Length: 152
Image (cartoon, rainbow, N blue to C red; front, side):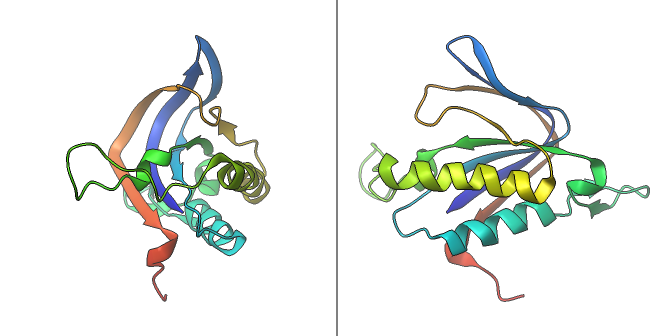
């Protein structure tokens, strides 16, 4: 799994003119799923996202996690995070999981993030043409990949 986590002041997802999910302060998480991903990857990534300390404390230092600021998550599926661009100019998405594998993991990530935060995770619609609006705060953008876990 690969995630692009953006600290936001606000973010929303619109599909066909309807808002499917919106948040105030928190994280916009773009999530890519590949065939090799497991529940272990999902659990690791969910814990890392929720524990990420990138919100300012009283001294302006990035010491606070999502729970410390009563923040929210907007989770968006994004298979293009697994684009391969070595050959030619048209990206290949062969590493991205097909919907039969990706949808159950995406739905489990929604449940897992909601369970950890104790709050409903806002979402887009898997596979839809989504319009994402955000106000990136900082900007702070973190990329995580479950295949590149650090041993700390």
